[in-house]
Image 1 (cartoon, rainbow, N blue to C red):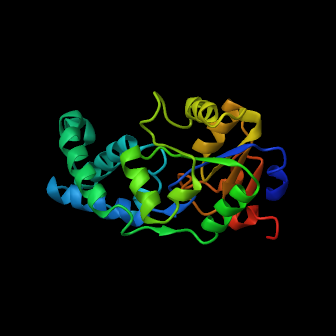
Image 2: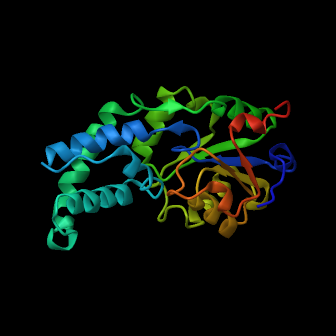
Image 3: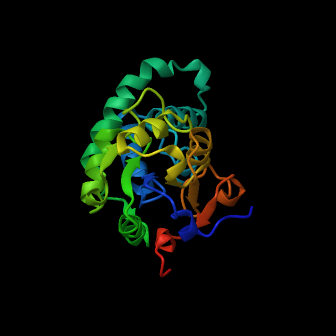
Length: 236
């Protein structure tokens, strides 16, 4: 797909909404560790991190249900024969407990992420972190990785009634920042971000290295693509 040069997209923008997992921070290690501990608590088989990567991006609830269905299938137990709804509360409690305990310890900030955030701030844009990750997970992670200071607002997946790819979180985040969607750049890593941006009327840039459900990101309809957020800097 053709795309607009990243720095050109900043012209005329008043604000930017930036995704977290797969865009700013590689959190696959955190997911794998917390999910592994949760599955052990439940007496269920472990899951390969590569399988987890394809499940990330639609919120922790979706991730947890996907993992439970996956591991029950590996164990030779048809998910339909297991009352996952009854299992879910215990799984969620254990997952939340373990994730909060290790949040950020097995994660790394992507190369160029800090430079990209600095470039957005230098361009005079107001910034919000807009993620499907629960707010209670997102805020500590941003602090632990030295990213919190770049953002005026942080909105997790539980901040609004619906999550990306629904456009509602983007529309509400724009309202909070006092910016029109057409003048608010969405920066993300997946079709969730792009679909939400298109529906909300926001231009969108996608990074090439994140979690896009196993699909090449340049196949997703977006206004631009970058291999590192530092490409948003004018000198890049």
